[in-house]
Amino acid sequence: MLYHVRMDVRIPDDMDPQRRSDLVNREKRYSQDLQRSGKWPHIWRVVGEYANYSVFDVESNDELHQILSGLPLFPYMDIHVTPLAVHPSDIHAGDAE
Image (cartoon, rainbow, N blue to C red; front, top):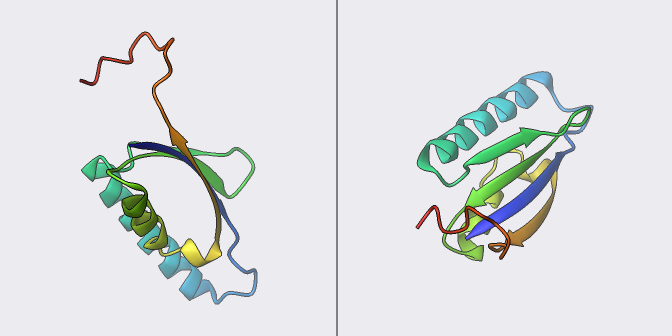
């Protein structure tokens, strides 16, 4: 199942700089492991914002929730999830099968 996910990060300005650095580094490792596994095939930065648009390819809503809630920055994020379905006009719709 494919999901389009927007993540807006809102780390408090008064967070200890060392804690912030640790969180960001853990977030990067976690997300890159998921990218390598194929669960997080696309991630794009939103220009001018501490935000991203991502595509996740997972088995279920529950798996996506587990992945997102496991993000080290999860407590500091606003997340919007949109489930995706194949569009009937997509000329590449059967390519992955």
